[in-house]
Image (cartoon, rainbow, N blue to C red; front, side, top):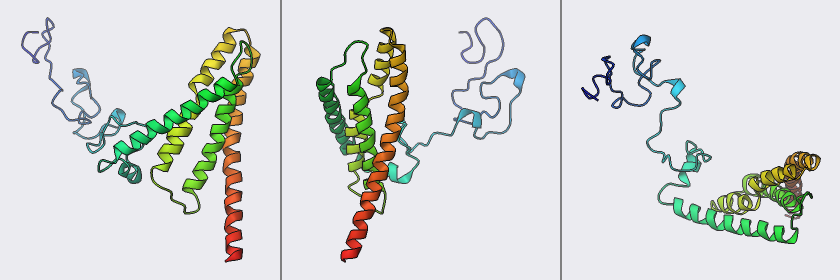
Length: 216
């Protein structure tokens, strides 16, 4: 390239380098199109998304909203490694439990995949139970219980990938009706299991609280 950043090779048209400009400072002309004009004054461009927060590590799982102070505090002060270690241990335990259930209920060709179905139904019910016990009624357990039991154990126990593979396998085997029934049935049963786990746990917790107040 002759002339470095001043000219494009063989075109003879001026080219201004944008590498030194801060994120979000290009206004309505972020890519430097000469025909579009210089654009407005510097400032955040909504089309380019929010300006990155320098205090947030972009390598952390984006599913965790680190703009929430309580969630960001879980990873502050060197506390990230215990969380990561418990996630790994919990995920291994959950995956081992799912594998054991798959051994008890092996899948057969063109048959309903009961192991995966029951795994997701049971896991969703337990997630409902766990969230009520950890987040409602003013109860606050150990801060590592949620990542270990919820994200780790139950996240490793339940499975979306095997569920999707089962659906594709049934379609490949010519069992389209069974595949569609399994596809829809799993979603309905999983949602119903969460609702049932939450509802039953809330009632039991409230009944236990009334009994304690009556005997106090």
